[in-house]
Each structure stands twice: as C-alpha cells, then as structure tokens.
Length: 277
Length: 261
Image (cartoon, rainbow over all chains, first blue to last red):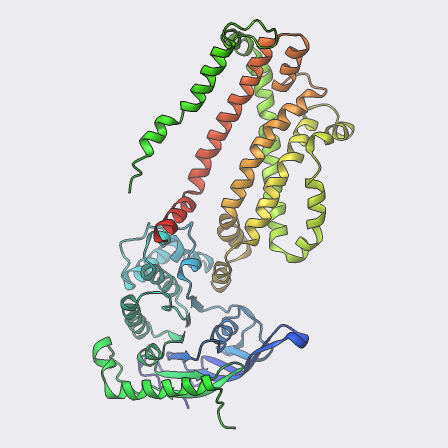
C-alpha cells in the first residue's frame, strides 16, 4: 500500500510511520441534527513522504486536516504523530492555510511573521536570524523583510506563509488547499516551490487539494477520498520520475494516465461510490 | 499614489472653525446683552483669567484627574473586555448585567460615589472611570470576539504561549476596536471631568466655570467654556497621533483592501 519515498533518500527510512490516522471519525453536532462528516479514514505516511489528499468538494478534506493538525477533536479513532496521540497542535508540525491573507499577522512585518514561531520555540537570536533569512531566501522573498503582508500580492503572501512554516523546521508540513486562491501561473510556481523545498529539506508533506492535476504533479502518492461521510476510496502511487517540471512532467503519457485514473475516481466519488468491503 | 485633494483638504481644515469664530465675533460685536458679551471682551479676559495662576491651580488638577480616571478606565475596560471576549461562558453570564450598568448615566452615580469615596479626588476619578469604562469594555469584547478564526488557528498551530497569544494576537487584533472605544471614552471623560467638579469641589475647570457663573462673571465663564473646548481639541489631537502610530498597519491594510477591490 505504501510506496518508498524517493525524494528524501538521504534520510534512512524509519521502520514506523511518521503519521498514522486510524479509524478517524468526525461527527459534527449532536442528537438528531448531527452530521457525519468523516466516517472512517485510515492511512499512514512514512517519514519524508509527500502525500496528496484529493477529494470532491465537500468531502471533508478540511475536517480531516484540522483533525490531523489537532485543531479539531475527533469523534472516534485517533491520529498518531511520531508515536504520540494528537490531542492538540503537536510540536514539530506546521500548517499552511488556504486563506493566506488571514493567516499572516497583518500588524507584523514579513520578518516578524516568520520569526514569531521561532521565538515561541525559544530559538536563540542568532540562529533565529539565520533561519528567517534562509527561509525567506528559499521562497524567493529575500528583499521584502520589512514589508507588511498586505503590501504583497497573494502569491507572495502565501510564500511568506510557506517561509514561516519552513523556518519552523517542522517534521511534518500540512498544507490545506494552499494554492486554491492564487492565479494559475503563480500556482505553478508555488507547486514547484513546494517540490523543491520538500526535496531539499526532507520534510514530510501532507498536501490537501481539490485539484486533480496538482495532486498528481506534486505527490508521491495520492489518497482519493469518497464524498461525505468520508472514507478512503483508493490510494494511488504516483510513479513519475522524481525530477518534475511543469512542462515535461505534465506531458508524460504516464502523467495523463494517472490523471485520468484519479479523475475517474473523483467522478465515482461524486456519484457516491464506496470502496468494496 | 498621492491624494491630489490632500493639499486642498489641509487648507480647508481651519476654514469652518474660522468661519464660526468670525460669525460669533460679528454677531456679538455690539451686543449689550449681559449674558452674551462681545467675543472680543471674552478673549481679552482669557489671558488674565487662566494664565495668572488658574492654569496650575485648576486646569492641571482637572487634567490630572481626567488622565488618572481615563487610564484606569482603559486598563479596566481592556482587561475585563479581553476576558469576557475570550470566554463564551463568561460572556453569556455577564452580558445582560453589562447592558444594565452601561445604561446608567455616570453623573447619577456622583451622589452615591460621594457616600463611598468622599468628596476628594478619588470620587472625581471614580466618576470618570465609571463613565469611560463602558465604551472601552464593550468595544474590546467585540474586538476580541471578532478575531479572525484562521489567525487564531495559526497561533494555535505554532503553539504560541498564552502570553504571546494575548500580546501578539488578541490585543493587536482587537486594537482597532479598542481604539474606537478609547476615542469615545475620551470625550465622555471630558464631560465627566467637568460634571464631577460641579459637585463639592474646590478646584478644577468645571468648578471654576460654576464659580464664575454664580458670581455673574459672565465673560470669564465664557472663557472657561472656550478652555474646555480647547482641551478637547488638544486631547483628541494627541489621541489621533498615538492612534495613527499604533494602528498604522490597520490604515495600510484597509487602504490595500480598497485598492484591491
């Protein structure tokens, strides 16, 4: 079921999964008006993997991500990160939200935004400085340290949010439809940025999206969700070469096949198909 | 981009005040009405009325009480407002009570406060606090409650400690609302400063105005009223300077949202 992570080959493969989601169920509300958003989700992610989760709209993708992030209590089942049950936002996890404009502190400069979580982690000042500079450099924003987020374009704001996550040096990075609100060209750039950072840093990435192309282009594995109440419909291993770029990768026959396969799964999910058994 | 109308607006800023003063001056120029002395006479007595000892004896004590009461009210309002705004249970519990107390005009508390706090400075400061605290408190509650959900989640994900969350998220985020409350509180504070000095006082601007009125020193009484107006203008100017510094991010954010549509 799991594929070997190729990207972070430098890191020796740990025997256990980094993230384990077991029988996750989430019901909103109580009594007769309760809504079952997630019925049963079980999957795991190995250290260094880049996994995409894709599903039709309303499939409870955000619910799932919020449960994994420890922002939302599960109704039953559990999320285990590095052997520890998640009950609140765990250490060593960073999240990039879709609403970049609302996830950066508007009263802080770009630098302060990136630096704040490091201060909370009590990283010494010199080290903090280095991390902030490196992170901003890595996302291509080395020259806007003292700007405020609202002075930047949407794509640049999301880069700041990514820089903040990267500087935090998380072991797992959760991304909740991070590029849904930026234009197509910016989105392509940001997708490449995520691939580059992931390969360079060896961080584990869980990337939630509703965009089929994006999930195939980015992931080593794509987990396709059913419609609500959500279960895992299928896990698709993406056997594309590790060096990907927008032009060649997307024109590979294999890319088209995988894309068509995931597309078909999503169509089935929309019709309400469920995995057998 | 620079606003082309800005120069014009700065020129026009003193236009209305000048017009009003001119109207007052002209309509009272040859007034013989005892209660409406010519503005010229009022202004001539201004200097000797206020700058021959009354500034330190009356104006400064008034301002000191105002400042004390105002600062206590802001601290209290922000403190309680943050607590109430952060907790749904607390909010449900105290909100009806708040509405009740807020509806009581502070001046009617003066006789009651005199019983507890005597007739000294404490009473006057308390009157100012009891009136100023409400706009700050209620605006803070609103500001804290309306904090962006995504921003809250972000703070949780990056495990901000409670203290940093308060300083970097809650207070900064509620800042614009708190400032709106503090601005309202300032004008209420000036009114209460005067009212508190009309009962059982021995100095202060309000006290002095009442003394002049009772002594039929009508031009002097008018200078007191002008003095109050000037205090109000200066204080609101100081407030604006502080506000524009602290909330420059907010002005910028709003402007950028407008241009982005």
